[in-house]
Length: 165
Image: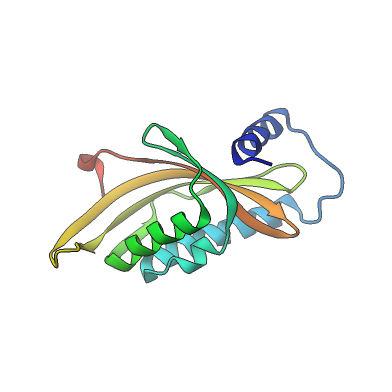
């Protein structure tokens, strides 16, 4: 299923409250798994390691942000994220509010809404460095595939620079 069709299906399923028989995990257990994946993303940013993030992303992935919808390949996302995290050392990358975690009634789809504050230093290609400071909020869409959660979509937004922590 194409990622944009799946994202629309997530919205329809969640809006209608539709449930399917055969869910294997309780919704609370599934929500705990999604929260743990979110915490892995936080830890990966602090460690400068894209591998744990990319390992849970699907090939068919959709992103929305800065007024655009894109379908970057897994390889492109890995390259972009690896380069970014290798050049950036975060002193802080943490939740500013408790993430909102929800799971569909059938336990197959879920999402995490998060807001993080971050600051650190990014090394530029010319040998100089710059301070990095931002507040970002996003919604991460997940699909349970054969008992494993995979990120299938993301919509993110950054606060204006004067509102960072």
